[in-house]
Image 1 (tube, one colour):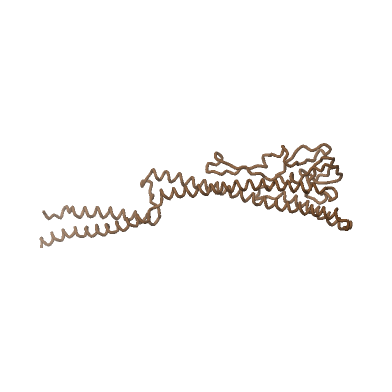
Image 2 (cartoon, rainbow, N blue to C red):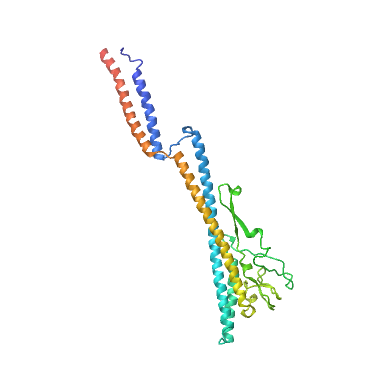
Length: 329
């Protein structure tokens, strides 16, 4: 074999493999450091495209899940207010019993009960005005005033056919497709309507209607009265209502809580479904993007050894030039 120095093919070959192994070693280090096997679009364009779509789906699912969680929070706060309203109605019924069913109570005692009853009516009205993050928790459903009421007054009748209003219902989107996907309708509970009861007896005096809490009107038999007012001067007295009014109001509030619970249950299942979808898609993305640590660790050791070997071979191939120099001495 001739000894040449102008064209040392051994050095060229060793240098080629050295560069190749160094590149593979650097890529392996990057994969292990990042935990990803798709570090550049040219690594696997098809897989990268699928991965981007799946990541976008995960982001949309996370947004939908946040919307659902917000809806659940809205209903939880609303239910807390409804529970308080129910306890207030119970207390009102208790006051009615103590004021009218105990002959030992003096007129002053009855007046004390009546003052508390009026204060509780104001408290019920204040509850009906509560909001959640700027959104009203409760709705006010209006119907045409009954005959005999002032022309400017309005009433609310619980479960009437006129209760639906556009501002009483809102939708929670429960899929990654936004408005094109599934959705759940939630309601602002008609608390004032629930507290508006048909008296079935004629009452005279000033009282608050659900639609106009400060209105002074005169009732007739069959009119609806609401014991929720923004001002104690327009509230009902205990003597103006019967025990049956409280029973009906409490039944109405219980219905609203049941309606609230149904919506909360549906949202909870939707949240669970979205979380499961998000988890499964993340797992799919991981299978596409995540590096196999064991395999890549083996590759790191492999290319580290090959790089060192190639470097040694480059050094060895360069010794050929030294041999040629010895012959020239």
